[in-house]
Amino acid sequence: MDLNTIWFFLLGLLLIGYAILDGFDLGVGALHLFSKGDTERRTLLNSIGPVWDGNEVWLVTAGGALFAAFPHAYATAFSGYYLAFMLLLFALIFRAVAIEFRSKEQMGWWRKAWDIAFSVASIVASILFGVAVGNLIVGLPIDGQMIYRGSFFDLLSPYALLVGVFNLSMFMMHGSIYLYLKTEGDLQAKAKRWIYKTFSAFVILYVFTTIFTLRAYPSMITNFEHFWWAWIVAALNALAIANIPRALHLGLPFRAFLSSCCTIAALVFLFGIGVFPNMIISSESAANNLTIYNAASSQETLKIMLIMAIMGLPFVAAYTTAIYWVFRGKVKIDRFSY
Image (cartoon, rainbow, N blue to C red):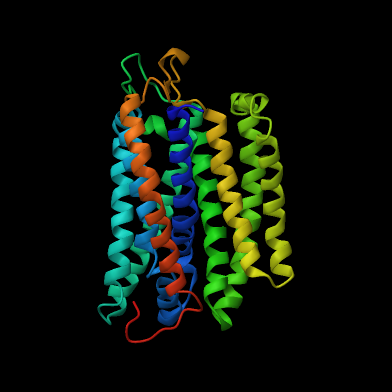
């Protein structure tokens, strides 16, 4: 395994960490308006309040890794997704501001406005992440100079939007399971109902999206011939999905949450295997694809960055672990709460 491949999988590991951790953040935000009353909505905010900013560290780290290891892919992606990235950035900003500002004033209209902003921003961000993945599968109009030749609306193909809605359903399921772990009483019972509803939507969209992908883009399983163990991951993914309602039925919500985490990790992994060794697929010509070789930095840069990653990643993991350990347990509303 050469340095280019190592960095491809390191980048995938960072994206898996972000998808799992910020996935339930975004899911909680998407569910926010389904809660009733000020206390319930404050409880939802406080379930993610201590951890949401730490979760986004994984996205920042992934962006930095992409810039350092695959600068050509970074440049092409940010030019092609420019308006989409700006929309995503505004959504993430509004989520952060809403969490901090929502309970600063007592007026009903003030809190309602921030509730709507928080929920809409979470939904938009979740869909945009999925749309980005869908376009990486479909391919972008990239020319021989690695320049994107499309428009913002070219990114909104039916398949990309399907993957976007599927991603939203996955994050909402993930978030509802997280809420079931962090709440109690009536709100916990409500969260359990959300789990079954979002799980049903997720399974339907999972089956439909998988069938659509295999029929329209069979190249996504071409690499399975070389990486035969990817079929094992696909099978384990199906078992993880099936274990979610089973674990809930047995009264084991933490196992259901772990199964949801494994589901997300497996889907990101299978996507990576499907596009490997490409970073960005060109819809104009396979010769224009940005791969882990023609989009990469020099070997010396990759080597130095790998040393830095080996030293830095344990700190990110340790910080994340410490935060979740400190704020473990059920959410309690007090004078220091959001």
